[in-house]
Each structure stands twice: as C-alpha cells, then as structure tokens.
Image (cartoon, rainbow, N blue to C red; front, side, top):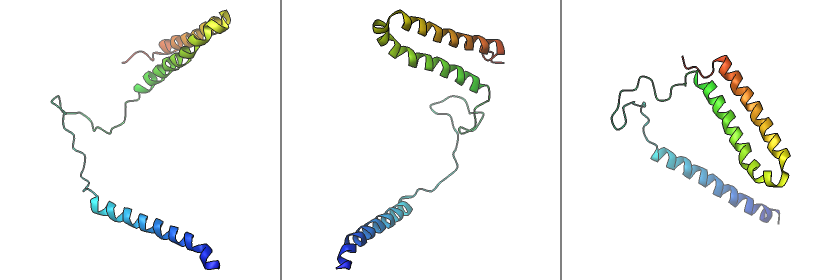
Length: 118
C-alpha cells in the first residue's frame, strides 16, 4: 500500500533524470568549437581601433544620465495629456513645476560642463 503512493513520485523523478541526461548529452553532441572573436569591418568600412566588447569611455555616462532625465520627462508627460482636461489648471501648474525642476537640472549640468565633449 505504501509503495503505491510513491510510484508516481519515482516515475516523475525518472522522467526528470532522463530529461536532464538527454539535455546534457544533446548539448555535448551539438556543442560548437569555441574560437576567439575576430574583429573585421562589416560591409566595408575601417578596421576597428578597439575590441567590440570593450568598455565605454567614462564621458558617455553623463550623456546617458541626461538622456534618461529627458526620457523620464516624456514618460510623465504622456499620461499628463490625458489628465489635463479632467483636472484642469492645477495639472498644468504641476507640469510646469516638474519641467522647471528638470530645467534646473539641465542648467546645473550645463554649468558643470556635462554637455562639453572635450
């Protein structure tokens, strides 16, 4: 009686074990030989000066942060356009306050030289 209760568990365990072994066997049979990544120009162009998986220069990070600030601005402005007719003047005032805060951030970034490339 007790063995009949464990029979589905043993069958399921056998199926899972067979699946794992089959996956491992297929993976080892179908595995490709790994070779180093060769860099060459795609469809013409110049030879690359650095490896394709190299890190970005640090000067890209402020540009990324400024882009994200403007991206968040648009993320909040799309639903705002739907709310303005219902809420009225207070929604317009809140959006101009929000844009003022973003403009202060842009002015600060400009003053600190985040927009200068050299």
